Amino acid sequence: MWRTSVATVMLFALMSLTQAQDARKSGFDFMRPATQALQMDDTQNPGMLWVKDGQMTWAQKDGAANKSCTDCHGDINRMRGVAARYPQYSLVAKRVINLGQQINQCRTTQQQAKVWPTEHPTFLGLEAAITMESRGQPVTPPSQPLLADAQKRGETLFNQRIGQVDLSCRDCHDSLAGKRLGGNTIPQAHPTGYPIYRLEWQSVGSLQRRLRGCMTAVRAEPYPYGSTELVDLEAYLAMRAAGMRLESPGVRP
Amino acid sequence: MASVIVRPVSALTQSDVLTPLVKAYAAGGVVREGRVKFDIAPLVDNGNSVPIEVTVESPMTQAQHVVGIAIFNEKNPQNQVAEFTLSPLAGRARVAARIRLALSQQLVAVAKMNDGSCWMQTVEVLVTIASCIEE
Amino acid sequence: MTRALVTVPKTAKRGEIIEIRAVVQHPMETGYRRSSEGDLLPRDLIRKFSCRFVESGNANDTGAMVFAATLHAAIAANPYLSFNLRAASSGTLVFNWEGDNGFSHREQVAMTVA
Image 1 (cartoon, rainbow over the protein chains, first blue to last red):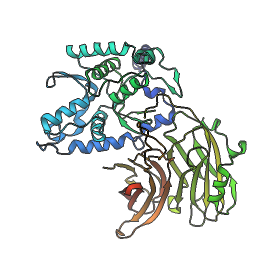
Image 2: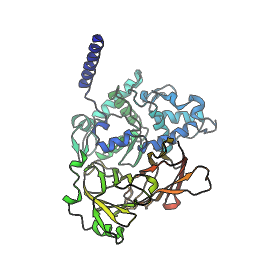
Image 3: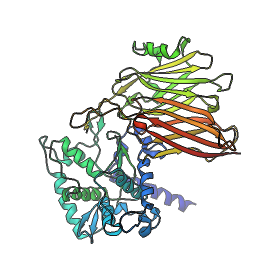
Image 4: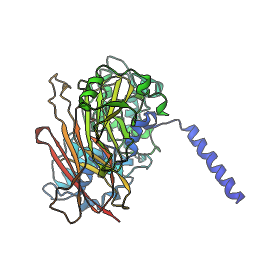
């Protein structure tokens, strides 16, 4: 009994120590309770409408091969932990790709179907449904030398000042995180909830859409969807958020 | 803690915009303050999706029930938010929704009883301006 | 394709007051916003919502009105509504949304009352 309580005390001490050392916070922690409630309740979270669409798409046969995701992968719940490992280096693509690009790769190589266009609702729904299977799982970028290169390039981009406003990602999301910009708190930019339902968009959108939005906001020319630069940034952000828990589908202001 | 800052109508003067809307909804019935509880956060950081809940004191029996609830706002481009029709089948006079608020303003919830009488609560909400707006 | 999420308990005790929640996918375009090109985006709203209760064994009946709503532009995109029902007997809850441009969506959920 005594031993148990000592162990418990030590465990709590260790947990609070890790928490004290980890100053990282999800964007969720910076939201007001009304918006947090929307994410936490699956019966209210509008992101679940896209997830429902994605779950149906998972089982639908498509393309010249007339195959569904189920035909290769089985039930969608077998995707647990998968989204937490993207972006990653793909032997097929011979480059680092994000989860959306992986889905499109499956479409062309396995289903022999056309790729989903950028930000297509069904595409986002499928990505959200797959990511939801990793809810609560830690972000776990694999250890791959070519992924490490992408992470390094992404870090350089993160620290590089851009646009007429002359701000880097770091200027806002490291140095000024927690401070206010208009009515919002500047978050630390950990991509733990993507694809997210953003109140501003009134729909679900990808991390690349969000990154491009930031770039436009500082009056820089945003990198095109699917560009190496955006995937590199995603790879760096995933490394920066390694160990944090996925919470898809996230809701953000 | 939300109730700390939301000021009920007794502490507020209802906006001249809201009063005629309430009167029109009441269609000649007497309108009084009370019986209606209008729950809304006093400070809104995103006007695109504001949770609201309206509950009305009523036994919800065939003999005595709420037939409708209307919500009006003061400063959106349109003053109507929603009109709800309730029936005794509900068992409880309650509705929750998510609404849009363009600016800081007053809102009123009016409940109409089956005898034609109306009850209301007016609240005032602060809406902060969002940053980094796209589209 | 339109998606909706309807949350109703599968079973309820007779006399119990249950909570019903409904979310439907819809932009609720106000008619006041402009596109990035400056054009006014046409109004596209859900105007009416209803929930009716059809008692088991009365499949041809249109049922009794539980709750209805008239919605305006101030309702958030992907409208969420929650209301109550006193469980009296087993049956089906029929949900209907109707709006501009011929929008119409229907869902139904069975509920067992013991």
